[in-house]
Image: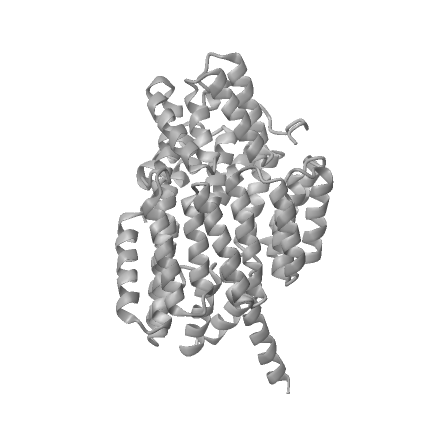
Amino acid sequence: MRWTALLLVLLGTAALGSQTKSHAPKPASSTTTLPVTTTVPSARQKFESAMGALEQLRRGESLDELRSAVKHDPKFAQAWILISHLTHDPDEQATARARAEQLAPRVTPGERMLIRWLAGVEEGNYIPAISAMNDLLAKYPKDHRLAFLGGRWLLHEGRYAQSAFVLEHAVSLYPDYPAALNELAYAYAYNGSFEKAFALMDRYVQLEPNQPNPYDSYGDLLRAAGQFDAALEKYRMSIRVDPTFGSELGLADTLAVMGRETEARDAYVKAEMFAASESDRVTYELQSAMTYIRENNHKQVDKALHEVAKHAHNVGLAKLEAEANRVMAISAPDYKDAVHHLKAAERALAQARNISKSDREEERALVLQVAAERAAQNKSWDVAQKSVSQLETMASQSRKRSVQVAYHASAGAVLVEQGKYTEAIAHLQEDTENPESMLRLWKAYKQTGATEDAKLLAAKLAGVNEATVEQAMVVPAFRTLLADQQRQAAK
C-alpha cells in the first residue's frame, strides 16, 4: 500500500563488457514481472542480452542487441520502444517510437503502459506518460527491472528524491542488484548525501569487480564531491578493466574542472576514438571546446564551437547544433554576437525534421533562458521580458522539469538585473544546480541580508564540479573571489 500510494506522488509532482554474469536475480513467477511479447526465441534471447548490457551501463551494446532482436522479430514492440528510449539518433528514435506505437494493440496491457510512458515522454505528453509509468510500477511492484528503469528515468529528469524512492524499492526487492545500487548512489550524491552514495559504490564494486562501470560511476561521484585525484584513479581503473568502455570522457571532464585543460583535450580526443555514435562524438567535441572557456581564450572557444555546430549540422543532430550555438551565446563577450548565435540555435531547432517534441521543447526553453539572461545583462528589458513571457507560457503548458526551471531561472535573472532581489529569490531557488542561477541567488541573499543562506550557498557553488559551460563561466572565478575575500578578512 505504501509503495502504490507513494507512486501517486510522482504523478502529482509531474502535474506540477557484458561477458560477466549478472547479479540481477530472476523472479520465480512470470506474473510478477512485465511480460515480454515475442514468439521468436532468438529475439527473446537478444532482448535479455540487451537488458543485461543496459544494467551494466553498456548502452551501445544494449542498442545493438535490441536492433538485432527486432530483425529476428519485426513485431517486437517492447524492443522497439526501448530502442527509441536509448538511441541518440533522432531518425532512429522517431522510427522506433512509431513502430512501437503501431504494434501496441498486439501486446499485453503492461507493455502498452510501457509504450505510453516512454513514447509519451518523447512526444511531450508528460501527464499521461507519468501516469502510465505509475500504473506500470503499481501493476508489477515486484519487478526489480521496471523499478530500475523508472528510477533511472526519474534520475535523468532531475527528480532525485523520487528517483531514490523508486530505486530503494528495487534494492529492497534484491539488495545485491548492481544496476539499482549504481543509480541509487547517483540519486543520493545529487541530493548531497555523499557518504551514503560512496557506501553503495563500495558494494557495487564488490559485486562487479570485473566490470568497468562501477569504477566509472565511482569516479563521477568522487569528482562531484571534489575528490579529483581519487576520481582520476577510478576512471583509470575502469579503462584498465575495459579500454573500450568510454571512461576517457569522465577522465577528461575531471581534468577540465581541475583546470588541466590541455590534458583534458587530449583525453577528449581519446574518448572520441571509442564513441558509440555520432551523437557521442559531437558531445565529446563540445566538451572539449568548452575547455577554452576556462583558459579565457574566446577566439579559440568560438572557433572550436563553430566546428562543433557544423559537425552537428552535417550529421543531422539539430539539438546538439542548437546547443553549440547556445554555448557560444553564453560565452560571447559581445551582446550582438550572443544574439547572432541564439538566432542560429533557433534556426537549427526550427529546421529539424525528426527531433522529438521533448528534445525540441527542452532546448528551445534553454535558448530562451539564455536570451533573457543576456538581454537583461545588456539592459534590453523589452527583449528580456519577451523571452521570460514566452517561457512562462511554455511552463504553463509543459510539465517537463527543465522547462519549469528555465522559466524560473530567466525570471530570476531579469529581476536581479533590475535590483528586485527579494522577488528574484523565489524564482532562483527553483534552479539551485545551475551555477549562473546560484551566483545570482547568492547576490540576492547578500543584498537582502540573508547572510547565513548566502554562506551556505557559496560553499555549494564553489563545490560544483560538473564540466558544463555554466560551471566554466562561473565557478573558477567564484572560487577566486571567495579566496580573495578570505584573505582580506584574515588581514
